[in-house]
Length: 223
Ligand code: DX5
Ligand code: ZN
Image (cartoon, rainbow, N blue to C red; front, side, top):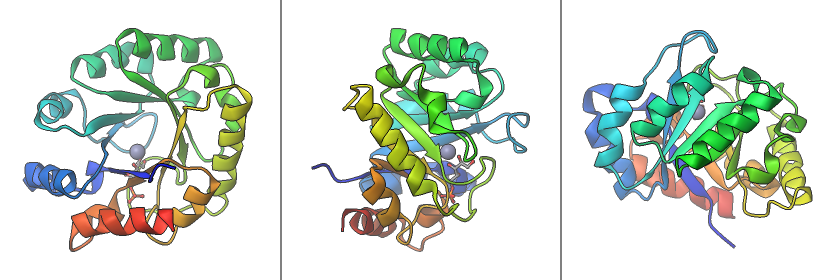
């Protein structure tokens, strides 16, 4: 049994003191640093990208977990790979089945970890073309675009379905990440359903003490 991994999303961090925020979560035991890349087209928000990742990646030992909420991941993937991403999440909705296979292959050829993300209304079956090869699946528990939204009730059912599909495909190593509205109240639900990695934006960075918030969410999930 492995304790859940915590992936704080720096979208909720104080951008004017970003290096302090990174140090706080790293010392607080965060496993991944979750970087929400939004292009203003795939989702109605514009956030951060390659120049930030280039500086952040060499400055931390955490896994740089890049969540690409963008229209053209096949074009832009190499930029993020070169900038130092360890784990790349592409959205199934942005790609055809054939493109999804190419995206995962491109990530693996670069020696990085590959994940496919699903918006709340996208069925777990969208993972089918690549599920046997994925390092991780990302189940969105809010509509992507903004931090600080409420967890969509029932998202844990999709986590359980994704877990069952991975097992059926013989991919026992695949991690499941859940992203959106995760905190001490929702972590136990998704962890019980099979989540391995919990993204936390506001639950960590809007807490008075981000390090103890990480411990609290992990503790709640592992109860
Ligand atoms: C939403 C992003 C999430 C978000 C999480 O589009 O993908 O990573 O920032 O923030 P919280 O945990 O506050 O919902
Ligand atoms: Zn995210």
